[in-house]
Length: 392
Image (cartoon, rainbow, N blue to C red):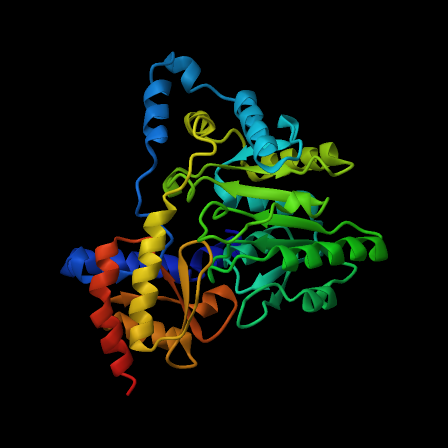
């Protein structure tokens, strides 16, 4: 016997991963230079020098000490370094006792939802959204409630979110800068959202946690990214170093339970319990210590900005419609037919790997991840032209 629910999850198609795997096959067959892979958010810029130096320094330690277990929530010194960084950067006191080091943002969100939600609760997401939110919500025994963002600016529709809140609502996930659209939620939008949530908490007499999914916080093109714990008391931050330090495959991040919560200690205890239940304890120790040495190191945003300029200029000249990204490294492009999956399949004929929006809870768009080699973007323009001409 096997767990049928887990079997179904394993068998369920993941379009991003499918396209990524298809791209690997095509590159092996016809050469990487002939495939224009916009499928996955895999940073093409190298990790900053501080990461390499941190590993070199750590390798000089006593190997027994270097690779030993830490407490389940993480190395106390690493947690203290993260709390100190948050305090210095955002001006709100953060304590190490409310920091839980995780294997990236994925485990951070899975832990958080299991910690603050009870089976039967509802979790609100703003669509389009990262598809694994659905999986983590269902694993916590909860129902995912999709609320479309405003179009064309893709800011949260606060009135629609308020209308979606019920007596079973326990959390709302906010991802800004946003994957897949690249929108950055404005201070005005987030203030209105947080004021509404505080009002609904009082009205319903129950907690509504704001889960801030922030792997792209440092990757913006001039837009402000407001710090949500300063706007809403019941905020839990889920962070990953995958993008800020170009370490996607290393899977390291953290949960921060805002010290502004009156019962932050109890919430953090639930986080620890959820981490234990899910098996997400003692994140890779060498990585913990390496990222602690690189806190605040700036991302190479200029590389992504240049890619963004080349891609948007080229697609504009070809007549494609898209949302101008303010952050992250994704371009949300209108498909040339209503069926985004069919459009994505046709794009394969031109060796273009574009993720259909159906994966993100929306229709009629595709996501392009432009954290790829600049040369690949430049050489892909004839393929985009041929794709467009195929619809004439």
